[in-house]
Amino acid sequence: MADLSSNFLGIKSPNPFWLASAPPTDKAYNVERAFKAGWGGVVWKTLGEEGPPVVNVNGPRYGAIWGGDRRLLGLNNIELITDRELQVNLREIKQIKKDWPDRAVIVSLMVPCEEDAWKAILPVVEETGADGIELNFGCPHGMSERGMGSAVGQVPEYVEMVVRWCKQNTRMPVITKLTPNITDIRKPARAAFNGGTDAVSLINTINSITSVNLDSFSPEPSIDGKGTHGGYCGPAVKPIAMSMVSEIARDKETPDIQISGIGGITTWRDAAEFMALGCGNVQVCTAAMTYGFKIVQEMASGLSDWMDEKGHKSLDDIIGRAVPNVTDWQYLNLNYVTKARINQDLCIQCGRCHIACEDTSHQAITSSKDGKRWFEVMDDECVGCNLCVNVCPVDDCITMEPMAAGLVDPRTKKKVDADYANWTTHPNNPGRVKEAAE
Image (tube, rainbow, N blue to C red; front, side, top):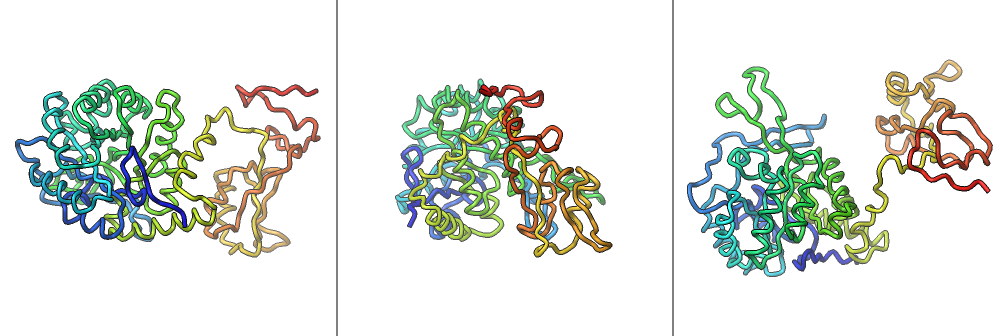
């Protein structure tokens, strides 16, 4: 069987599945249940400094986006950091780590952007025996209005400064959690790297309003007729998260930086994709809130089965494997040509491929043959865009088939001889090196 054990920054856990800092990790009761269900680690819900209590709303805290089948695609969260007393959290963290020594326990922190505030909280967290800390530079709501969360994460100079303070004042590994609410995710990652961070985690939630109540004209969730922006998470943010992870993983200015992946991870496949893009482990929140803690069992068994099938012995066999294949657009091979093919045995004659192609693409799919309803691809018009594949409701009914080299000129879609087809540069392909024809 594949070995799912994880060693992230020297922090060992039986599998790479951690619960992210969020409501599911707010207290010992939840964490105990999570570990019993099989989670490899947790990032404890964000602690703040000792002082005036954090007060959350006593009403709806989540907005939502659903698919047509009522499947939850995204949550908009307006909940703040923990509203439980610091000392209570610290006692529970210490007890949990004592009771579960083989599991990873990371503590998320957010205090004012002042060195004394960080110096005060680090030693009391360290005393719990926690395995590390995660700096919450990501929350886009509530705390950012107070100069914390994403208000820090959006300023690379602040990121580097706070990371440096933490590295100078604790023995614990430091993970810097990055906000996606920024133009270039590499900038804060580079700042954290320069400050000495041991790893980065991303993405935190995306600033959002998910809906507006058209009776009260209040954003949802509505609190006494008013609403506010919140943090968006769930399956809908996965593509954004993976793109940002890949940008950091291949950035030459943050060589070999460790990454903990977050953002819409719901299945073992999601986790494998994040790890292939360079993540040493993954953190999960919305999936656990939607389906309960036992979802980790499906994630772990699914990942193990896939690794066995592919011959991967350990996580190291897959971590970062996709990174060399992520490139910039101008380096894509414009000699590579595909055409759509419709499997007539699987086709249910719904016509969605034809309508999508006819109305919005390249008019490359017929709708009739010999007076009968029939859908077929016309190679001369097909540009290989694969829109038809994505709108087809039947798995594998439409596939993209590569054309043999030399048959089609991508610029004109006309047949050419094999010798001419060997060119590797043309006006639409800047930056390519033309190979010597001889």
